[in-house]
Image (cartoon, rainbow, N blue to C red; front, side):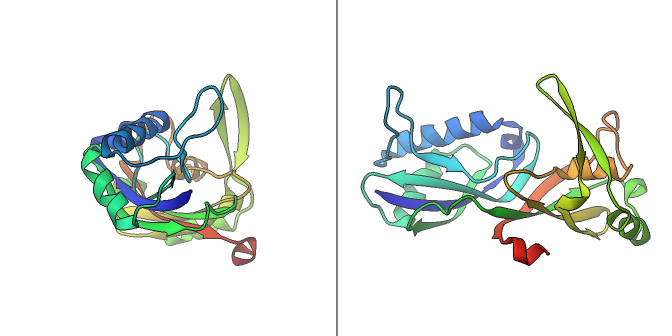
Length: 213
C-alpha cells in the first residue's frame, strides 16, 4: 500500500457541493483515471480516501487536503496527472506527495479571508475588544438541538485587510468554529443578513498545542 497527500483548490460553483457530493466526485475521478485505489474490507468496500477538514457548503478554499491510498505505487506526479482531467471544474490539484501514512489525528490551524461590505468591517479597536473581552457565544442548531458555543478559544487572530477580515482559527480535538459564527459573535451579522459576501480558506496546517499557548 502507498499513501498520498493531495492539496487542491476548490472554487467557483463546486463550492456549493456538499461534503458527500465532493467525495463522490473524487471517487468518480479515481475510477475514470484507472488508478489502483485501495479499498476497505467488509461487505461494502469503499475507496480509501478521506478529506482532512471538510468545509461547509458555500466556502471556497485554496488549500484542501485529501488522503488517498493505492494498492500499487505510482509517482505522485503521475497520480496528479491522471486525476486532474477527471475532476470537475473548480477542483484543481496544486500539490501531490507520497507519505509514509496518513498523519495521526492532530490539532489544525486554518486561515480564512472573509469579504464584507465596508459598513460591516470592524475597527482595530473593536477587534481588540472582542478578542480580549472574554467569552462570546453563538447558538449552533443541529439535529433538532441547540447548543451555545464560545467562539473565543478557537480564534487566534483577526486582521483587517481592506473590506475583508483575515481570521486565524484553530481546531482542537475535532472541534472548531466557522468564520460566520465568529462574525455573529462579534455582532456583525445575523442569520437574516446574508453575510459575509465571500469566504475563502487560505491555509490548512497541522499545529501543536504548544504553538497556541
